Each structure stands twice: as structure tokens, then as C-alpha cells.
Length: 278
View (spheres, rainbow, N blue to C red):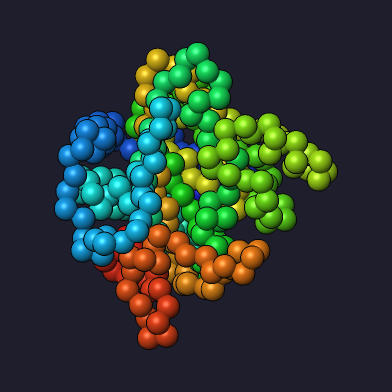
């Protein structure tokens, strides 16, 4: 898809996110849904040898939430979506780069919790806070629900304008279900809290930049909500040294999987783990 629509790119730059309706074929999403169910039931493909004997924390299972990182490496059928050229073309245009590579992909399932407003909540966070070893501050995620998705089943929400705020990550946490506490801290700093909810029909895709604060509410519907997230990196992204406040070196899971460059640093252009998609 050629984004010869300046308004779409302009909207992404202004808001930090953009949704496109009717982008993906329903038959493809149905195929991916079957693959995800097989993945959750334990049917796995053999992962590349880079994954062996590594202390990788790639999955999270709870009563209300399932998260599988690097999902396309253990379920190859997902690659039909992860390597979709139309999605990659849009990511490339939004990032204003000549090519895009895979950074990571994941499947997130939010189980129904009709009697709870807390379970399955994904806390306010920035993707950037988890990608601090990336030299690029300009990365994008395609957020793809496999069925209709709205506030009732925990669709993605954004804090409007947060991609333009100071890039402090204090208090932000993907796994913090109490989002009100984070909102209070943000409001105390003088920022206006304005939630932007999304309603996405099956086949629609939401793209958001890595500096935008986002999260999602509980799934109070009666059915499971499943999303595939594809994280894209631009051509110029590379490893940079990053440390925590105590001086501890930050290491992303990707660092343990990719090859090393001539300087001995993780190579984020490793074609086995971070292949060029377009």
C-alpha cells in the first residue's frame, strides 16, 4: 500500500498513532487465529538454535493475560502476518525510512473477566522504555486484533500527546494494573490526562510510535481478545549502551539472540533474528 496520503502520515506525527480500517483480509486473520490457538495449546515449531540454552523470559501466563514474545519463531504460520508486505510498507512510510526490519513480535490474549475491572488491565507504558538499547527513538508497532475490538474487550488506549512529553518512564509499567496511580503522578506533573480509546473492526490495524504512552482496560466481554503486535525497526537502528539508575547494564532479550558485530556489540541487523521485511 502506498501511503500517498499526507494526511495519514501527518496524523501519525501529530497524534503518535493512526488506525487504518479494512486493511487485512478476514481469511488471513482466521488462519492466524487457528495458529494462535495451536500455539496456546502447546503445538510449537522448532525454534532456531539461538534460542537454546538462553535464559530468556519470553512468555507470561496469568489468570487473565497471556503474552508470547518472539511468537513467529515458535509458530511459523504467524509469519504470513508478521512478514505481510502491506503492513511493512505502511510502517516504512510512517518511519520515513528506506527499509524496515523486524524487532520483535508477540501475541497477547486477554481472557474474559466480566466480573472484574482490574484483571487483564495492561498498564500505561511506552514501548521505548523497554527498548533503551535501541539507537533509534523512531520505531513503530502494528497492533492487530484478530476480531472486532473495542472498550468492552480491552482495546488499546492512548494518552493523547504523550509522545511529545518529556521521555521519563518513571512509574510506567506494562504489568501495573492500577492505572489510576500512574495517571495521578502524571497529572501531578501538570500534564493533562486525555484518554483516546479505540474501536477496531476485524481487518483494521492500529499503528503507534514507541514514545506514545498506551495501555488497555479489562476484557469484560464473554470472549477472549487476541492481538498480534509487530514491532518494526528502521534501517538505521543499532545497539547503544544503556544503564539503569544504579549503573547496571540494560540487556534486551534480542541482545541474547543476535550475532555480534565487529565491535562485539549486538547486531540488530542480524538476518536470522531481525530480518529485513521490506
